[in-house]
Length: 309
Image (cartoon, rainbow, N blue to C red; front, side, top):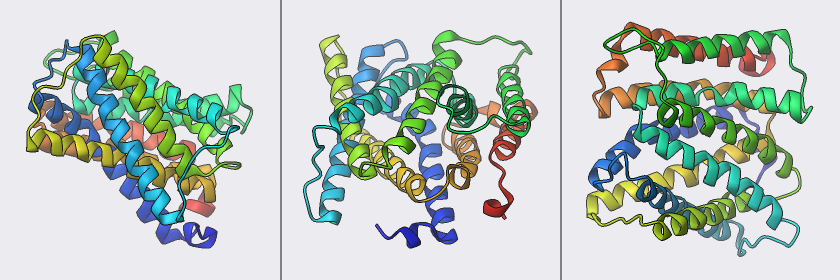
């Protein structure tokens, strides 16, 4: 990979926005996939099997395409296997175990906004636990603004209250914590390992773990049609393309330069959930205000005049 090409402003902008658009589309598309597969919100193990199948396909796609592009089979070395396992547990198994279950118990708009918190959590983990950067007042203010946005969205609905479901909003938040840990490790491991190899094998390993676990516990995918199969393949492509491209951008650019685009994740998720799922909440003033606060918070945390302007 040409380092100078990956550092060009147009490449960073287009690449990051593609990632955010794909991730944003995953929120409503997972719900649509559940409906087409006739997967009930209470059928946890079928949800896990569905997720595992998606990520197994994603891993195979990344390994296949990466091997073709690099003209060699991407196989992890002995010292790489523990890193792949740690990443697969955080980025795939735990993150999506919480995400898939949580999404089945909340709506796409709420999920997309809460997922935007991963930037704040990642900064706290990198600063406090891994000492990779300094936790400044600016970053703290940004985190507070984003947290207020997350609280505000839970007030929306027919009645104004602060009700939060552990299986819904709670699990979505746990998903962001797992993703935050994986983001810190990806940046660390990519200095020594091929980011495409890490992405592909962690998806394949994590996907198989989830698929086998879901099937062993009684999960079944019985309503396969061209439509439902196509949606599953699309979601696999979302993971394969977005995570691999994002990892490459992080490898060749500073975290702040790439992470600032993270504010587009809830924006795309917000818009696509409103269009595809027709969630009336998507157009409420409270939901819009919470989305604005989250976007402002993410921007403040990642603001770097030299890179943003």
